[in-house]
Amino acid sequence: MKDLKDTCRVAVVQCAPVMFDKKAGTEKMVELIREAGKNGAELIVFPELIIPCYPYGMTFGYTVGSRDKVGRLDWKRYYDNSLCVPGPETELLGQAAKEVHAYVSIGVSERGEDSATLYNSNIVFSPEGELLNVHRKLKPTGAERLVYGDANKDYFPITETPWGPMGNLICWESYMPLARVALYQKGITLYISPNTNDNPEWQDTIKHIAIEGHCFFINADMVFTKEMYPKDLHCPQEIEQLSDIPCRGGSCVVDPYGHYVTQPVWDKEDIIYADLDMQQAIASRMEFDGVGHYARPDVLELRVHE
Image 1 (cartoon, one colour):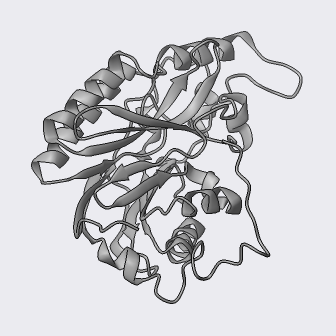
Image 2 (cartoon, rainbow, N blue to C red):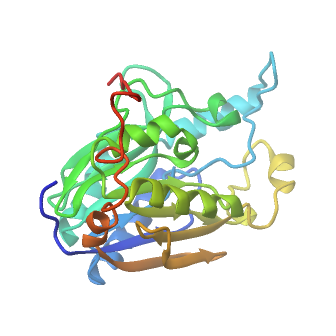
């Protein structure tokens, strides 16, 4: 592995979306990029589907074997506020990344290029503002499958950074052991997890992955309240059933030994800063390198169809 730059100042942006409004949502994320950049962030990480939102608790009128007309109207509204990648919104986000000269990772609902299919995607910009890569979630979780399609490309893209290769898996993709290994095989030192997972068990998962991959795990979750949903959606009964804070956050950073660099933050919007000692990512692999000296390729082999 090449020599790594000693430190990385990361900003994990735990924020609320501007629900169903890609214009206002993009403007908010641009301002947050600028704020993180002013505080010296070299890598700025946002949650899953922060533009236009994670439609938590909504069914869009789906039941087994049927759909309703008003649910279709809400789905079309969500579609209209999803992003073309590249498109006007990614241009603005890239300009903000260039302005602060930082890598930016952000989760969006992406429109398919040649279809009306939506994808749960994570996009990464370079410090020069270039859109470096797009990762589409391999398998939407549970009822997410009613909204997003399976990834059909961009399975495991890697971003080459001064701190080593950086990859990401979106939320429950991190429960897929082979998907994790696909990233480990590319030598990642930074594992980004944009998600909407405030379960206490998730904190145990991310510590395990940090140890397993001997990498820094950057856990970026969102926080939002029931009151943030648009009042003119066609499913007020679904929104009313939600708790006051449907997603509580829990964003944090874990080091390659499974220890918190920053403690989880709950129930508020915040930008979490951490100065990562990137030499730990190499030093921690002295006795365990899961795809190096601790591997047994003569016994175990992973084939990835990219």
